[in-house]
Image 1 (cartoon, each protein chain N blue to C red):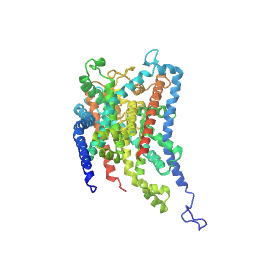
Image 2: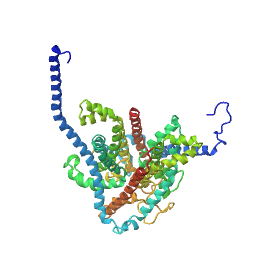
Image 3: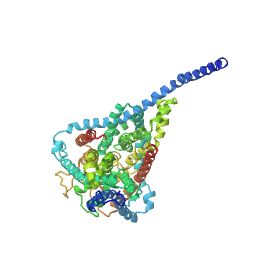
Image 4: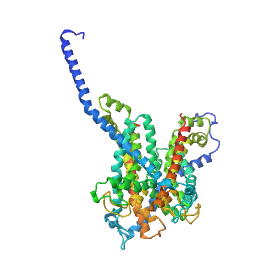
Length: 314
Length: 313
């Protein structure tokens, strides 16, 4: 900065500016707290999980399908509640992916700027609705007023008279994640350069063709990221499944069965004051660790995908 | 055309051929394409229609079920199993307000501090700064119940051993929404153009003086928007609170450090929703209306704030 050999620069700071350095470190420590949070999550899950595996063999935990901690002797086959989570997530996605992507294509390719400006925030209101409200809606409206009357008779065992079922929770979660898919996919599709649209139109492509053959593939990694993020949210959703999914662990993907998910098990077991060090207390952490790893994988994939589409068009 | 004579018939032939092809294309193809296009557009409208109908149905159902329980009792009275027609949400409302105050206290300094470091100081080519960045993105998508487990293992029991007190709930919720605040604050800081910083530095201000007097004031609306959205998320969270001791039946006004338990709006709604009797279902729905009104007001305020004070550089 200073001219070589010139007079001593008046622009140089007089002192060492300890205050500036202290502030820098103070702010850095705030940022480090975020890494610390992740570390704490891993450590807090790991400790009791190790204790859990000293009693329950890993083979039973990972390969058995009966999750019956309340029985004597208890059985801890985590697949019994992993199945519940997968069941709910699967049917939630069957609902949310077409609805979310349809909405996104409509918003980015068809809607006029004014329509878009009103519909998108309206849709995003759904993200802000507490999940306990969506769970209440699922169990007291979606299930009795939609699923039961519309379900085809005895198909898959019938829906009549069931107070809880995976499908009710799945539709509630679907409703919750539709705006995530719609909003993020819309952003991804709008990031596709206008030139690609115009080129396709010039070649005589119709609007539907431009949307499905040009814009959609060009935005695919962003769209995939939105879906993966939605799956991650669905895997971790708790209140909707606690209220609408039931509480019976079942190794099935049948949507009209009452099931229990990993999150619902954690919430149901941890409510109230359970004693530290018991196998039940430790099982919460073991299940939490499985859930954490599953969502971590989804999040890493999603972060990678987002980075990919940013690189292409930024 | 100057060539005249011999090439004229060939030219005419070529033009006729081109016209025939074009007309065939324009006539034949669209027929099917028009129908396909219409069907496609119809399906898209159906998709967005279903999504919006779902939202609308949720709101209507809450009002239909809860309107009978809407009364001042809802706010002033404690919950009761014996007299559901007089029961309310008083301890839950107070609990939620205290929780949110705590969340703000934790999350604003730490979140803004972390964002300032990442945007103003950190060198993004360093691996540890990139690690912090990816880590924050991941934390934003960790299931809320996992934060509950963290709170249970580290705050309520374990190292901090606070017990099942409201402050532990506040801290758990603060950790949950911290990534949201950091991400929003970073975006707000990034929107401040570099010329402002350079101008300030050129006039002899130190980096912190630049941040405090130029960058921060310019980005406050954006940061405030992010904070409000994060707080509204924290307000609606139930699952983590179940693990850190928001016990469901609290009939007294909770205090921040009281060991007798505390409650929060969503937890109380959850408790009413679990009871099959119509009176409790109505109470749950009325609680949902109350929460939706508050949340909608907060979110609208956040959007208004952003639009009102957003600076175009």
